[in-house]
Image 1 (cartoon, rainbow, N blue to C red):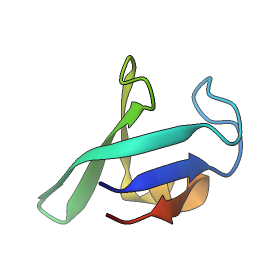
Image 2 (cartoon, rainbow, N blue to C red; image 1 turned 45 degrees about the horizontal axis):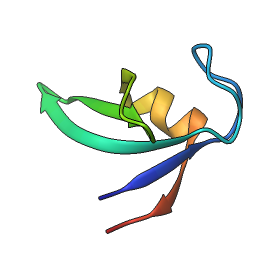
Image 3 (cartoon, one colour; image 1 turned 135 degrees about the vertical axis):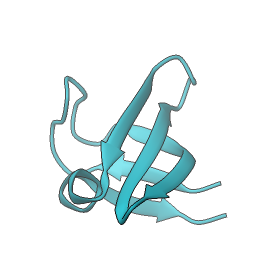
Image 4 (cartoon, rainbow, N blue to C red; image 1 turned 120 degrees about the vertical axis):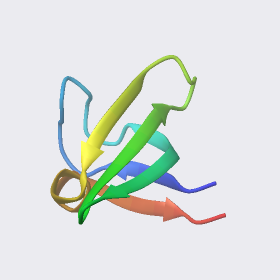
Length: 61
């Protein structure tokens, strides 16, 4: 499972918060990513631009 970390504050979450990538989807060239917090309590959905600007990959697999 891929784990991402916030580069900066985003949508009410503080810099450094870790997220699990739950799902990736693409529809007519628009990519969407679904993340869950480490405790799996909160789900957020971001587009590719938001992913690249605000998240960094910590671990793949």
